[in-house]
Each structure stands twice: as structure tokens, then as C-alpha cells.
Image (cartoon, rainbow, N blue to C red; front, top):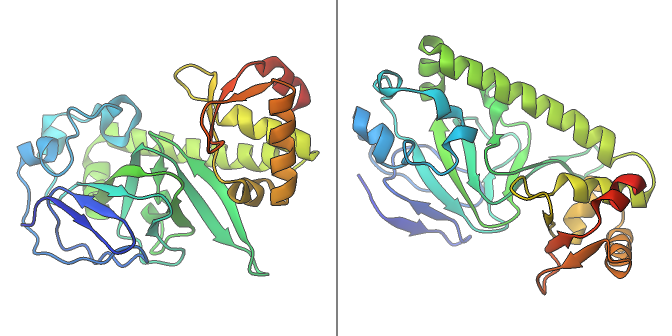
Amino acid sequence: MMAGTVKTERGTELKGSLYTWGYDARCVSFRASMIPIKTDSAWRGTSDCRNCGIRDMVLFADLNEQDFGMIHAPIDDLEFRQGATLYAEGNRAAGIFTLRTGMIKLVRVTADGRQRIVRVLRPGDVAGLEALGGSQYDCEAVALTDVSVCRIPLEVIHTLGASSPRLHLRLMQKWQQALKDADDWLADLNFGTARQRVSNFILKMRSPADGRTVTLFARDDMGAMLDLQLETVSREVSRLVREEVIEPLDKLGRIYHLREPERLQEAA
């Protein structure tokens, strides 16, 4: 067993115990001997499921001690720096990732070579759900901000999914939500004027905690998601600041206070 935090040359940090995973995404490569975990390790070991701050939002929310007794592979708690790749499109699917903090973008390359952001994941969302039905990842998952994730091996999901109706139901709910979110992103963010698309995007990026704090990201990433030029996105965001619909809270232009949501909803 290897313990501690490992920093890769791409800035990825791996915390906790590391095991053989065959992890070959572009941002990191590591190998260590595997040691099966005990029941209490599933709760407290590499990833502390029982005391997770967002446990009510994640896959294992409804599991009990008996369910965790069937886990014989590690669930790792990993941290990735902004810009690091969790997995690439076409990589062999080995597990799924529950997002605990930060944001992840899912990217696909179009036939003409352009990158399109198909969805943004926030805490409680799951990356790599397609691994449950196929052998490869359909998208590239990239950290939009510094992120922390729980990486769950497919064997754990398959074992628990077959024996625990609680997890099976949770998986179906997550899958249904992912499909709905993908449809909503497409419908709301890829049609209409530039003003409508940016307004819809800002409304979607509101914090669930207060509904008034909005976290955006690099304008080129926003453009890739909205199918707009970088300059167009910057112009629309600046216009909303001038009109005092949103108020910047940091110098990077990533965090905003939503002053008049009604005006955004009218524009959308």
C-alpha cells in the first residue's frame, strides 16, 4: 500500500492509498500493489464515505453497513488541478467518478476537429456513467477548477448494483438526471441569440446554496459550450456587468453576484 499525496508533472494530486488501477489518462500515470479493503476501510479508508459532506447527493447516499461489506476494491479520494484530464475520450473505462468539489467539463471532438463542451458537472454529479454500459469513455473529462473526486471501480458498482436495490435505484436516478441535464444544456444553450444563450448559462451556473452566487469559467470554454466566439461571450458578460444585472466578486471574472435574476430570466 502507498499512502499520502502524489503530485504528477501535470499538477494532479492523488491523496490516500493508491492501488493498481491501470490509470493512463493524459494527466497522470501510476502503479502500486493492490490490497483488498475491509468493511470499515470502505467507510473510512481512501475515501471517507460515511462522513462525506455531500453524502446525500452522491451514489452511496443510501448504502448501509451490509452493502459496504461487499466492497472488495478501493474507492480512492483524488484531487486534480485545474486543467488536468481525469480521462480522455476513447480511454478504456475502468470506473466512475463522483464529484465532491469543483467543476468538470465533458468535452467531445466534432468531425471537423472542433472541441465542444457537452456538459458541466458540479458537486454531486457523476462523470463516466457511460462506463456502466460500454468499454470506453464517450467524452474527455477535464477539471475546470481544482476538483476533488471519489473514483469508484466498475467492479464495485456492478457488485453492489446487482445486490443492493438502493444503489441500483440511485444509479438509475443519476443516469436519468444526466440525460435530462444533457437535453437541457442542448436546448437552452445552443439555440437563440447570444444574449439568450449567455443569460441561460448564467442562470444554470447559480449556486444551489443561495441562488445568487454564479461561478463562471474561462470565456473560451464558455464559447465552446454556447457555440459562440470568445469575443461575443466577453461582450455579453461585460454588458450584463454594466447594466448591473451581475456584479463581479473577484478579479478573474469567474465569480459573480446575481443582482437581478428576473432580468436574466426575461432575456432568456
